[in-house]
Image (tube, rainbow, N blue to C red; front, top):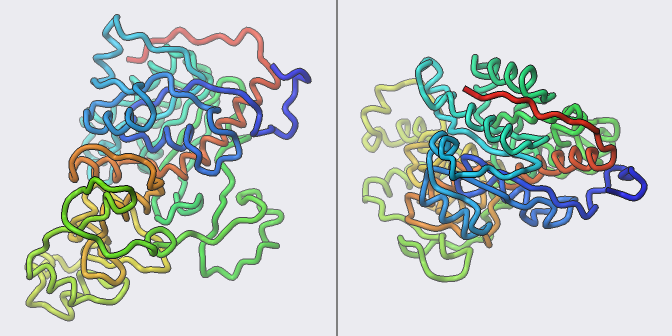
Length: 403
């Protein structure tokens, strides 16, 4: 404990170390935000991984390569039923249960078993006696029936206070418009006192002066303009080859593809930033797939070029396929590379991705942007410092089985 019993202004450089559990960890985007050196106010080592889990063996190799041998393979429900598996004590449990069950494409599939994977998450919260949890998912979670069930469980049965918000990664230094939902729970304090974190970046192009932020509690004192695609990838040369290379980053993952002559012709037909499939149909209908021609409505991002001085849209797992989204380079006639996608997700070049091209793409696209995670980690750290500054006696962990 601090000798004074108080933390002055929640001093984020205090030498506390808190134990962390990451579930559905993937490659470790959330963990990196908590334990990495990503410009947090708190010092490196303030969070230590005690346990992690995922069912993707390739993602686990990446996780353990970067964070140590903490992540174990297996279905979380089976692990919780295995008496040989001990869930360690932890201060905070973080994780993003697979989100496909909550996505817009699955919102009518009420029987989707992926919608139930939040239950073992809270069983781990209970067993680890964690005082704080962070659950991440798609924004649709917050309007689902499952969200009401989560609130009932964590508030009425497990004794947590919660704060739930939708956050945009661009507001926290990520060069990407990516919206995610976060639920933060705390046993000993109202998490809304520290969460959501103040925005560190603001939209470019706004006629905003710093003075306007002086009384705006949503922003830090001196926010910066949103980072752009140019900021994230503008220094990279043209890619080389079509395979992962055994060279130093960033060029190890900066490789291209082998597009067909027809694909190259399509790329060249829409050379300007921001163009998309509708421009292709207007300029070169003979190159446009019939399925696009027949589909007169729909997303404008398909086969779209990025803008240098704007943000990327959501980087998904198949970013190397331009027909899947706005994944064409702003000026070069190609989709973005794995390194470019990782940077647009805010992964530092020093982060080591393992496995095949396809598996690494999945790891990149499925990850929580580490810079966004880092800002959330600061909020959690402030909460835990409050616990250390004013210890609460006789905290009781509810005895409840999540089922």
